[in-house]
Structures are given as C-alpha cells and as structure tokens.
Amino acid sequence: MPEADIDRIYDYDPMYLADILKSVKTIAMVGASGDKTKFSYGVLRQLSEIGYDILPINPNPKITEIRGLRVYRSLKDIDKQIDMVEVFRPANELYGIAEQAIEVGAKVLWGQIGVYDDSAAKLAESAGLKVVMNRCPKIELFRPFWKPRLDLKI
Image (cartoon, rainbow, N blue to C red; front, top):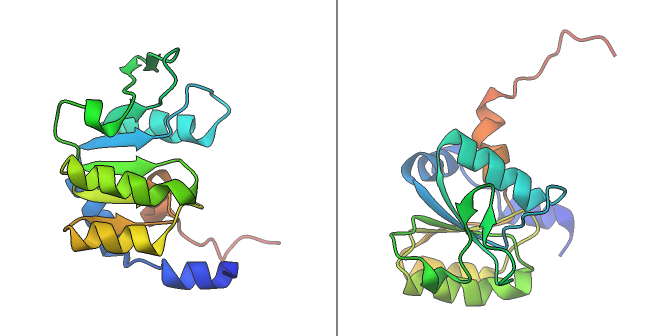
C-alpha cells in the first residue's frame, strides 16, 4: 500500500485521539525495550514521566525491569485493568495481540508507527475497543503545541 494511502486511511480526528489519551491511565506496552537507543524505550520513558502507569511487556526472561518498572511476559500476566495496549511489534503480530487485548478486557488497541492491520482493527472494534494504528501517542500528546512559525526567514 503506498504511504499516502496509509496516511489517508489512518487519519484520525484529533479529538478521537485526545479523548483516548485523556481517558487512559494504564498502558501495557507490548514490545517494550530496555535498550535506550530503541524508540519504544523513549516512548515508555516519556509516557511514564507524564504520569501514565506503564506496564512493559517483553518475553525475554533476562529483562525483569525497565526504568524501574516491572516487566511482564505477556498481557495475561498483568493482574490489573489495562486501559490501552500499545504495540511495538511487527504488523503481522497485531491480530494475535488484538485477540489478547480483547481477552484481558483492554479498552484501546494502539499500533505504533508502522504497525497496522485492518483485520486486527475490525476484530478489536467489533469487541468494543477503540483502535488507533500507525500513530505514536508520544507524538500525539504534543501535537496541539505545534504551531507554524510563518514569520521565520528561510
């Protein structure tokens, strides 16, 4: 699918995204990494510092915590309500993660930039979840503050 088509298909109303980000408290981050050079680490750090309850998920048994946060092996291992499942995994894994998100009673399925699957979205939406794909919550949180500076010289 050409990149322009992806932007068109996954063009969400800013209020839809804002409502999700205002309403969620607990975010399970599937594919969280303790590697400071990985994008997921930066997003985890930022969302945690803003005040979200981040639940990192990484199947590697050697990783027990990231930034002082307990690491879970799977969504099923989490013993509290999950508001949002954020996915930092390849797009071909999104459908299975959507199934798990439904099973644990999550309210939102969010695919990170590059993570999208229409069938996973339909499955999650049919189960009552809100769905966002091919977007980054860290970016969306700061988007309202981006203002064009037309007075700058080139």
